[in-house]
Image 1 (cartoon, rainbow, N blue to C red):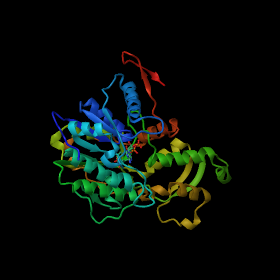
Image 2: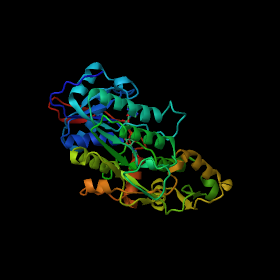
Image 3: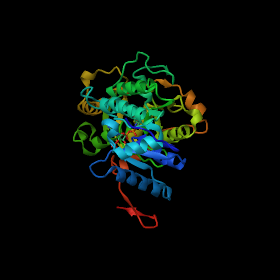
Image 4: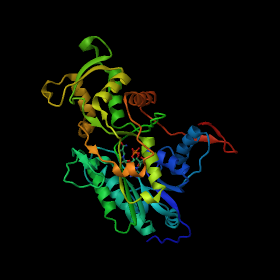
Amino acid sequence: MITAQVSEPNHFLLTGATGLLGRYLMKDLTLAGVPLAVHVRPNRRFSAQERIEAIFGYWDQQLGKVLPRPVVLAGQLGEEALGMEPGDIRWAAENCTSVIHNAASLSFVSTGRDSEPYTSNVDGTRNVLRFCQEAGIYNFHHVSTAYVCGLRSGLVLETELKEGQVYGNPYEESKVEAEEMTRSADFLKSHTVYRPSIIVGDSETGFTNTFHGFYAAVQLIYTMNNHSSIEKQYTGHSDFYPGRVTLDGSEGKNLVPVNWVSEVMSHIISNSEHHGQTYHLTPRNPVLVRTILAVMQSAAKMFGSQLAGKDIDTGTATEIEEFFYEHIRVYDSYWRNDPTFDSTNTRKAAPHLPCPHIDYEQLLFLAKQAIKMNFSWRDKLVKRDKNKELVANS
Ligand SMILES: NC(=O)c1ccc[n+]([C@@H]2O[C@H](COP(=O)([O-])OP(=O)(O)OC[C@H]3O[C@@H](n4cnc5c(N)ncnc54)[C@H](OP(=O)(O)O)[C@@H]3O)[C@@H](O)[C@H]2O)c1
C-alpha cells in the first residue's frame, strides 16, 4: 500500500508521453504552466529520462526557447505499481493529484486476450487505476477514442458508450473495456474522457512520429509506385495503375490534426470547470474519401484508381488490387462511412478552438511531409551548452 503524505501536491501524471499525442500534450501543458510528471518506459536507444530530453530538445528548437522539464518516472504499465522504483512511487503519491492516462497500444490485430492491444489497454488501465487508488490520486483524465462506437452508423453522442455495437477490431473493443473500467472506478472524484477520432500530423508543420491509418495507405501506394514490378505491364506508364477502390467516394472520415487535439485537451485539463465530461475531439466536417484518394494519388504520383463502390466482384480482382488489399487489410474496419460524432461538450468547453478544416491542400501537405520524412522518425538528443543555449542535434 502506497501512503500519500501530501503537502501541496499539484502535479499531473501523464502516461504515453513519448507517443504522438503525448509529446504535444507535454509541450502544451508545460506552456500552460501545468506541473507535469511523466511515466515513461526506456527503449533500446535511450533511458526514460533521455527519451523525454530528446522530445523536449525538439520542442526547444521549434519554439526557440528552453522549456521547463517534467519529472520523469521510469516504469512499465504492465507491472505492479506501474513498474516504478519505490522512491518514485512515494514521490508520485506525495505530489500528484491527477493522472492523464494517454498510453495505449494502437494495434488493430491481436492473437488473444493475453496479448496486445488488450495487455496495454485493458490490463494497463487496470494497473493505472489501482495505482491511483493506492496513491490517493482521485482526478482522472482518460484518453479513449471516438471509435469506441465500433461499427455504429448515424449519430453517436458523447454520453453513449455501450449501445450493443459490433466492434471493428480488437483495439476498439479494448478501448471500450478500458473506458468502462475508468467509469466504474468509484474512488475517483472526477473522471474526464477524451475521444479523438483519427489523429493525423500537425496542421502547421506536418510533423508526425507515427504512420498509421491514412499514412499507412499513402506509404503503401508510394512504395508500390517506387518499387513495384507490376506497374508497366498494364499501360507502359510508371505512374498509372488502374485499380478499383471498393468505396464510392462519398464516405466521410474524421481526421483531426494532433496539435488541435492537444490544444483542446490542454485547455480542458487546465480549467477544472470543464472536468467530469466526455469530449468527442472530432472535426466539424469529415473529409470525403474521394478527397483522400485524390491526395494519395497526387502525393504518391500514382494515378488511375477508380472509386467503384463496395459491390464489385472481388473474384475479378487484378494482381495489383489483390496486392493493395492484402497490405491494407488491417484497416478493413475503417473502409466505410464514419458515423456522425456529436461534439456538443467540446464545442461548449472550447468554442475558441475550432478544429482546423482538413481539405485537399492540407491533407496533401501532411502526405508530402510524411514522404519527406520517409515515413519514419527517430528522436535525437539535442546538445545544450552550459548556458542552456540550444546547440545542435547530436
Ligand atoms: N492515433 C490516433 O489516431 C488515435 C485516435 C483516437 C484515440 N487515440 C488514443 O490517443 C492516445 C495516444 O495515441 P497516440 O496516437 O499518441 O499513440 P502512439 O503514438 O502509438 O503512442 C502510444 C504511447 O503509449 C505508450 N505505451 C503503449 N503501451 C505501453 C505500455 N505497455 N507501457 C507503457 N507505455 C506504453 C507508448 O510508449 P512507447 O513510446 O514506449 O512505445 C507511447 O508513449 C491513445 O490512448 C490512443 O488510443 C489515438
